[in-house]
Image (cartoon, rainbow, N blue to C red):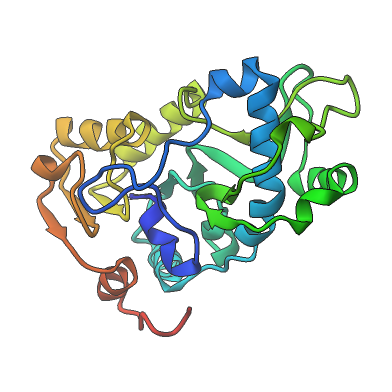
Length: 259
């Protein structure tokens, strides 16, 4: 079974949060409670997302994603648990994927639980905050954007059915992973003979728990990751190399066959 993090998608043009020492490269993203409780944080989030989301969605699967598909098709992979919200595993053709932290291409009403495409919200944002598109910004991780503007002017989308609060269908920092997803991840650990960690520092407990469970069960754990991880003392082996090159060696594919 594979556990993947931001490092597998950096070659697709999606930046990550942490450096090779496992420390934050940038201020932490919005916290769940701040988003839920304060309009000002929702205005900040949606303004930045209005600019960052289109850039995020332009990313394409890279050779590392395709190598995992090759492993699955050859019957060597139970499934992929990913911390990423980019859906690049699915777009590469991966069949068994657990989106541990949700998916950014979907939005959820926190009142009536309706889910809708993020693209529909993007159209609404561009119609109701047209002036934002003229702002200069820098893309940031997970569809965010670094920008300075008057966030208090931002119109915030609401559920078209009930008027409830809309939130991207992802697990923000400070929130918890659904229990059903945790249980599925544990089942995959039980099915697997070994665990492969790819491009993740495992600094968040949501993914680290699966590595710890595998270790408790005596299953070998191998990592392909450039830099420190939370589980360095649990690995049978760690390759401090590029994700695509490491996975190509395992899958027997050419890391240059996809960009």
